[in-house]
Image (cartoon, rainbow, N blue to C red; front, side, top):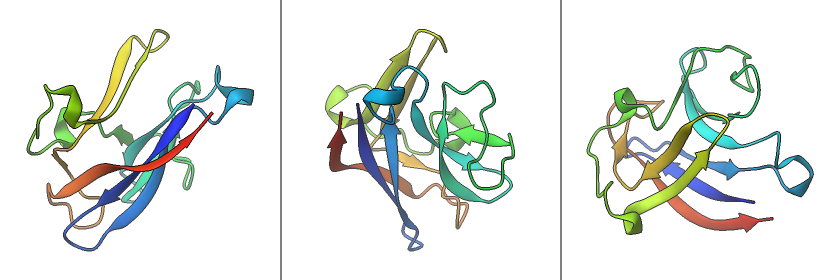
Length: 124
């Protein structure tokens, strides 16, 4: 199961990312979450259940997930679940992956003006 989000910034950056498992066939081995690739300077979807978490474009491991506090600007309404764009808990990782309607660091302009929004895309 999963959903789609759109990442947009005032600088014009606009991209869609899938979040969640790739589907019923690989739900136990794949869970995608957006990360900032330090090498590509791009927002990429990374499989958090992979042994080696890496950028799917350049294969570097120098990625930062968008739930990392260093990529977070204005917290938005992080405490209220109605302002949570996505929320996933993985027992293997022992962590909760959360995106909110707050601001984040843009991969294109390096400003804390990137926002994630649910784009309504869902699958099983």
